[in-house]
Image (cartoon, rainbow, N blue to C red; front, side, top):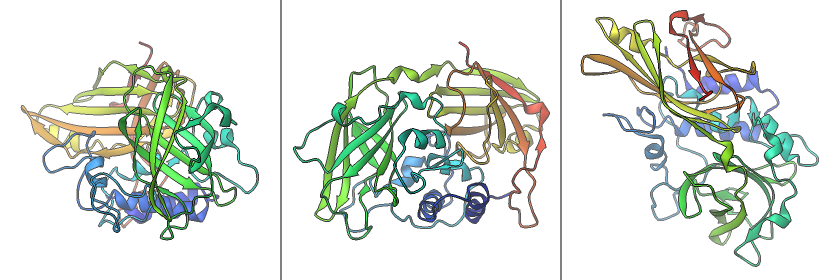
Length: 377
């Protein structure tokens, strides 16, 4: 079974019909950028023959700039790849969260809290709204002024309006390099986009590993008409403790085990890695049947489907010490209660049409592969 890039456009149209067209194109381009080549992403670590997400992204350089690894416009048009790897489709969850587009919304007044709710943020009350007086800048005349921001220890989301700066004529609006710095540490700009209706920019930055801190010093690099310029601002490092780190654990399933590793739970997203292990003659077959499609429920009754949100990728099955393994990483499981006591994973195998394309809202539940992750510790 193969998920194709064009499938995502159809799913987005059917599931999110109100998504603005300009953002729909951004999402499709982001999916395309992950399809370049035949690489497969596996838990951010390189297995033989595979590349990490960062390695893939560093191949895309800004054509008019001297080459610098790891940088390109965060929302610029990506080179279209050959095909979408199995399980890679949900990478668009970094841009589409629970069918809430990164585009700000309908014409009219900008609502930061409404944006957070559409993104699946489970604690929008953590946001600092109308925060102009709480933000400081390195420059006397900063490129932009931050209006609102949200921090939960995993992600920084902010809204801002541009000053007199003019964008690079190539794009028609300000664009950001896809890497930024927070307190001197390198981090990824997940998105930086302009809402055409309100003129407000919205940025999302994945926070690096930081100790509890009073402030966050943010440095971004924006493409402007006069070249690349730095945009720096400082906000209070509030709510950093909202992210929970949970110890690794192992669950028994039919024919083997699944180890749940690198568990991080926050109001903005949950991250974790599943490492399957199967022994015996049918170990290879069992490992190959772990597609990465799950219905996940939390203790508050929320349910998400990983067909649409949260998955980064799945490595191909591999053999080691007589056992067969498969690693599946979820970087952005959104819409789950950050205070949940558990997550129940119900794997299923979706049905496909005659062309091998996944048919949404179909599938057979694999009861012998159900497991529950304990988050109460």
